[in-house]
Image (cartoon, rainbow, N blue to C red; front, side):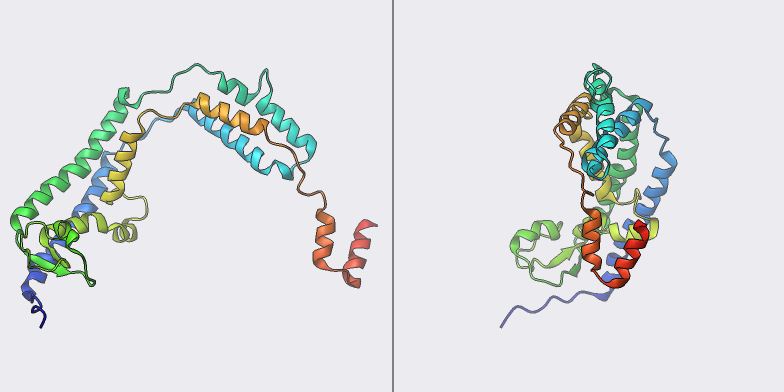
Amino acid sequence: MGEPELQLDPAIRTWVFLPIFLINFLIGILRHYVSVLLSSQKKVDLEQIKDSQALIRARVLRENGKYLSKQAFFTRKNYFNNEKDGVLKLGSQKNTAPPNPMTDPSMMTEMVKGNMTSMVPMMVVGGWINWHFSGFVTTKVPFPLTLRFKPMLQRGIELQSLDASWVSSVSWYFLNVFGLRSIYSLVLGENNAADQSRVMQEQMSMQAGGMPPDSKQAFKAEWEALECTEYAWALANADNEMMNLVGHNPETMLYHQSKIE
């Protein structure tokens, strides 16, 4: 015979399971509106916008230039890649160093605000839940798990005989912290500040990214890509292909002849 199934007190659902969920949800809502209040309007650099738009236009020409006439394609290509005054050529010769975000006071202020609205509440509430709800088994996942999941799902409960599918109160808190993304998106919209996992990903990418990309290298790479692009008109036989698709029936032939006349 197998081991008897663990029976939970129904009061755990009322006094442990639901309160932890509601606390996480309401703190996420509060974090979103506090972040909206503390957010400041970012300064827009006109030179960076001009550079990014020039790179986008060059890429669009490189990818869709086959739909232009030969003269139009080479006129635009000369505008970007001319050796004397081409936009991409001049951009690749810039000597300006990329800005360092660590020396920007506004960037540092935004990082401090992000930590205050995300990391600090998570640590405070997590410590309080670990103290107040410690030792409770709240729920069970509906599928079997191996013993490697016990440290993740059973924080605060040191029972070797307990099945790995059971979830402790502290682990239930962390599952709610990183698992309420869909509910926040439904209530607050897609771009919200309540999603803790998205906020942490943005902060990690900002720290790991370090220096922003050098526009000089981007202009040089785009100049080389556009220089190697060969022109091939994609609409050379468009009329014949269209007639082959339509078919040679009397109605279409009469219509085609009337349009030519």
